Each structure stands twice: as structure tokens, then as C-alpha cells.
Image (cartoon, rainbow, N blue to C red; front, side):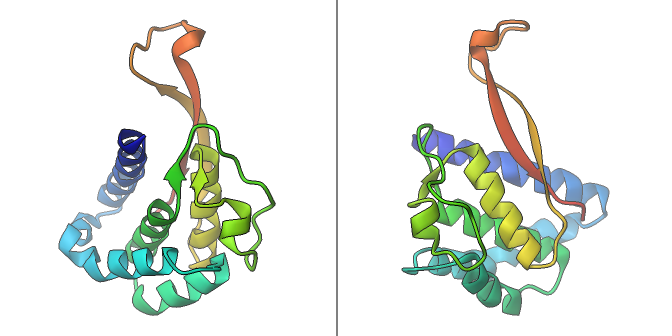
Length: 157
């Protein structure tokens, strides 16, 4: 399962990288620019009873640009959720609901997308969920057995 979590981080980072390069923000994407954001997001994600609103309040203080806000939403989401192909949200996601009661720290791509969108919106970013097919290992065109539904986020930067 560790490889799946790494893949999710790679997929989100790839989308952020592509969108940022189009917007001319590639210089801001150096990982050294995100150490403080990533560290804070990780600490917030480990907090008991963390909510979307409490995470947003803490992250907003450190983020000055949309690229930093997108990174914060990504880093918090990736730090909070552990990818699990069988776990789905047990309650609706609301800004003040303890995330432990909604996700229990686990989720699939839809939960990653929902949490990312909620944090991004709280930080003032436009974010949409993109639904499609993940072409996993052994993918063959027209072979529905290996076509897996998937969700990603897109943020215009």
C-alpha cells in the first residue's frame, strides 16, 4: 500500500507541476521553497481533532501565493490520509467536523480529492475534481477489468 500512497503524491505533484509551469511559476516549485509548509502541514495533520477550518487557519498564515496554497492543500491531504482501496468517508465532510470522524485517516482517491478541495477552498483557491480512468499495471485498451475509476484535483495557477 505504501507504493499507492507514493503514487497519489506523485500524481498530485505532477498535476501541480504541469499547471504551474503553464502559469510561469516553475521557479516557485523548488522543494526547498516548501519545507516550512510541508512541515507545518504534517504537524497539523497529526493533531487530534483537526478540522478543515483549523487546518486552513494554521496554513493560511504561512501561505502568501496561490502556488504555496496549492502546495499546502496537497501536503496536508497527503499527510493526513493513508490510501486504502476499501475505505470511504463515513460522514459528510464539513468545515468543522473532526476529520477523524469523517475519514479515520484513510481513504480512496475520492476522499483525497474531497479533502484537497475543502482545504483549497478554505485557502481561497479554485479547485475541481477530475474524474477519469487510471491506466494501471497491465492496462489494455478496451479491457474493462484493468480500467480503474480514479479522481484527481486540478487547480488553475
